[in-house]
Image 1 (cartoon, rainbow, N blue to C red):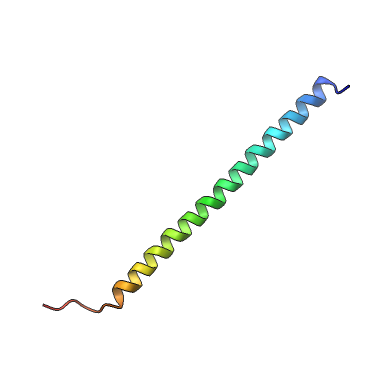
Image 2 (image 1 turned 120 degrees about the vertical axis):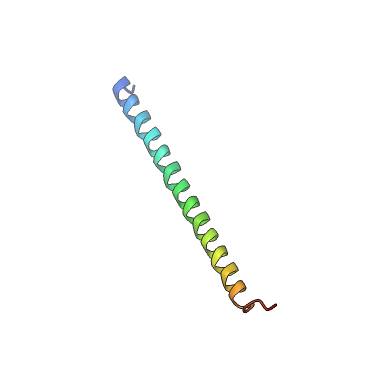
Length: 56
């Protein structure tokens, strides 16, 4: 039979690992989102620059 201390250690490690995995996953998703936002802004700026200056 598993002792209470061993069970508590395994539970702690499992919770710690799951929180770490969630943190890493959220960081990756945030990084991808920020990359897409900046890429979209750059594309919009390039599209605006290619139109040339406005004339009266």
